[in-house]
Length: 110
Image 1 (cartoon, rainbow, N blue to C red):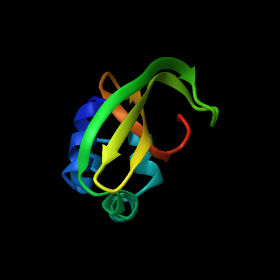
Image 2: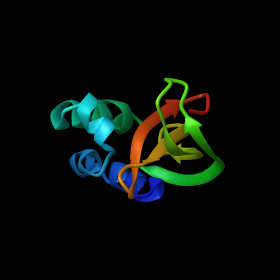
Image 3: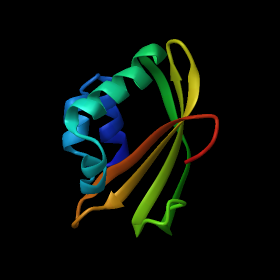
């Protein structure tokens, strides 16, 4: 599942399905309940999404954590009802399918 489709799940509050479609590495870090709770804590205060534009996309084979693989790093400027943020999504080639490995919200790119 690509970054934008995954973000659509998050936007709808379908955190459980977002977890299910995340990378194997992400699922090994968080069980479903923890992931759903964390995403709700992070996303609900922002309100409904109003606008999202791509700020940048880049490819890399090594993440700052040292993890290696084929990654695409997306940065979006997203306006929600209550705040505008930079939203980072890292997708990884996970056995032939692009899956979300990491999601962040903040003032800096992932």
